[in-house]
Image (cartoon, rainbow, N blue to C red; front, side, top):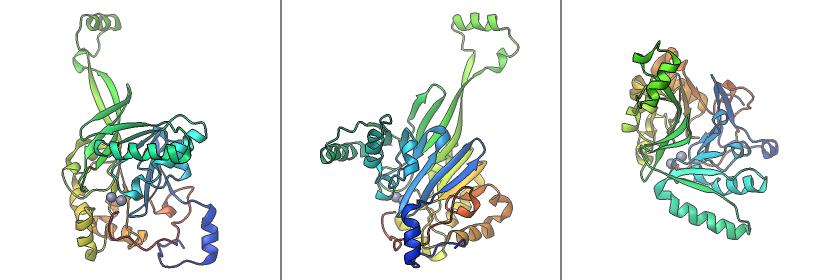
Amino acid sequence: MTNGIHPHYTSPAMVDRQFLVQRFGKIPLGMYSVVGYSVAGEETVVQVPELNVCFDIGRCPYFALTSDIICITHGHMDHIAGVPYYLSQRYFQGMKPGTVMLPRELIGPVDAMLRGWRQIERQNTPYTLIPMEAGHLHEVRRDFGIRAIATHHGGSSLAYALINIREKLKQEYFGKAGPELAKMRKEGVEIQYRLEVPLVTFLGDTTAGAVFDHPDVQNAEILITEITFFDPTHKSKAKAGKHLHIDAFVELLPKLKNKWILVSHVTRRTAIRRARKMLAKRIGEEQMQRILFLMDFEGSREAGEIEEAGPPPADTAE
Ligand SMILES: [Zn+2]
Ligand SMILES: [Zn+2]
């Protein structure tokens, strides 16, 4: 099937076919690509291979193992379950220890869980946990950092922005010769300024709020946002679960200047093609040029269709 999700249809042949094949979206966007799987309440894992980062880890599908850094947005199981598997498999396969960035409030329980897993597996799995809080920029390298931004999902939840950091010559020094600039620098003159360019921002789960006013959210080349609910009758579900409903997204869209907006975390209750059509109807095809659905596999290269079989939709923690 290519026209959407059929959550209640499972044939034995299909189960066989799915058993060995893990399906996920793979979307090339300029210099970067986004690889991932995201269905509300089931699993969310979104990787940017070129930047060596994976946002959330879902159940840790195979492709996610290759990212040296994972950024956990919040503690719901569909986003965090794969953390111990990710760390253990990387160790087992001789890869360097994984780094997990996560909200500061989750450090204690996650560390306790990982210590528990060391005992269970009788393997001294190494790991690095980096506590993050809203506004904090973790500099991975001189030219690359990851900033946490507060989201609105109840408890402590964070978005993450991948930032290219550049040192640029101040305009007033344009045209000056190299040796002269070097001399000024030596004398302590600040001839450069710092320029931060948000490349990819991942919101995780969130309802509408101040996060959408953050410059790293509005200006990222690629914004990955949830829109969990599309049906008019699902508005109360969006409110209860602190998720985005299409109505809220349509209101927020004018302030988003992103080159691409990638929609994730769509509920299984709404077929992905139907969700896309509903959005197109609201905002027009011109706006839709920059909007893609992660799970709209037909529109992505080197990927199959969304799997037809799935668990019944979850009503609560998604
Ligand atoms: Zn979720
Ligand atoms: Zn959640």
